[in-house]
Length: 166
Image 1 (tube, rainbow, N blue to C red):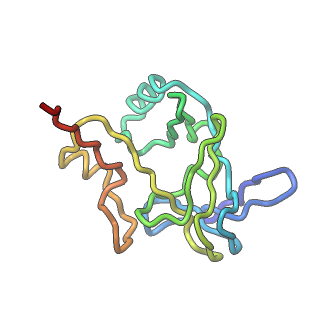
Image 2: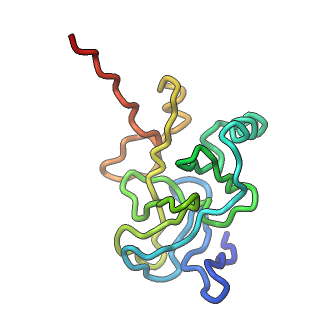
């Protein structure tokens, strides 16, 4: 299932398109070779509060990991499911070929290394989940990237609490 490539600017067509992915559902694939450091897309959508994202996740009825939310440094969230573009379909991978960088409240996706035409675009979600990482939570956030170094999870490792000295 191909979709029309998104426009990254008014004059230049996007270097990607959405197709079915072997990783998960839809994925984003390069329509041409992409150079390291090249800006691929801006992650767009409605800007909402973290509290509103929790309300929307609950109202959606599905697991919280099946949203298009992108958390920002200021505590706000971009909801790519509302007014977003095709970049919301970029899948997670433990060995990513892209990275997301925030710049003044906007999120841009950049190539980490050369990406060949027809290669799926992927970045490491490193999702923060504050609650216990129970087996059910780990299953809900299971990674399917297939990389040799796959951690099995889209979750960032929990920070270990240091024992107080003395």
